[in-house]
Every structure is written in structure tokens, then in C-alpha cells.
Length: 148
Image (cartoon, rainbow, N blue to C red; front, side, top):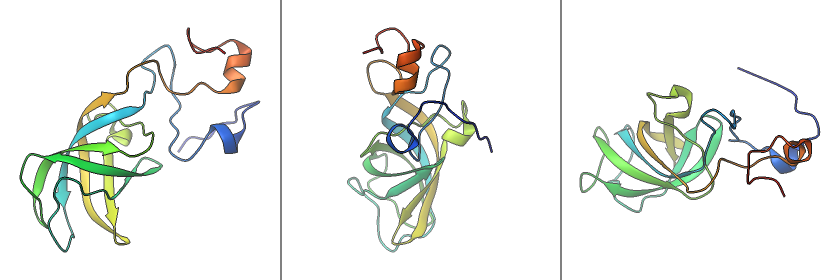
């Protein structure tokens, strides 16, 4: 676990659960548009098909993600498969091979864990890296194009 203090940053407005700190000059964190993952269905009463939108717990994020496409027609308890997922809110993830803590997740629904998975591929949103705090903008440390 890592903890650090950041001066001149409003914790409630600028840093939230699921935020990822990174080096803006060396492989900066970016928002995820969609990602491909290998999932194992552990405990689901029915079948999981495209359109299913449970909550994913990945690092400290707790975000609903839509199962956009499954390589199989559907998945049920005991099955493993490759799926494409789309987050419903901003989320930062990475492949398990590059950054293991940002590349594994649990799928939660009905107050229980229904599946677990590892991320195989990530499509990032276009544009620059993630949000730059107001304090960084004032200090002039924001990457090019990020200052007000």
C-alpha cells in the first residue's frame, strides 16, 4: 500500500475512489474506452450474454461495465471466455501483463462475486492523458495542452 500527501488539491473534488496517479511524461494513465478480458464465471444463476452490465471492482474502482461482446454466444457458471467490456463511467485499467494491479478484477452482482477476470487488451480514449489537477496547472507542471 502506498500513501502520499498532495498539497493544494481538493480531495473531494479532484481525487476520487478509483483515481490512478501516474507520471505524465512516462507512460501516463489514460481513460479506458473499452477492454478485452478473459473471465471465469464462478457463481451466476443464469446465462451471461451481451448487454449484461454488472459492477466491476478493479484496483480501488467500483464501476459498472457493459459486456459488449462475447466470443461465445453466452457464458454460465463454470465457463471461461473472452469478452469485450465498456465502462459506463471513466475508468483506468491496464493489461495484466503490463500492470498486474490494474489488470485484474472481480465482477459483482446480486451482492456477490459472480466472476473474476484478467485484462488482455485495452483501447484508450483519444486525446491526452487523464485529468490534471488544478494545483498542477497553477504550478505549471501540466503537460503541453493541459493548461487553462
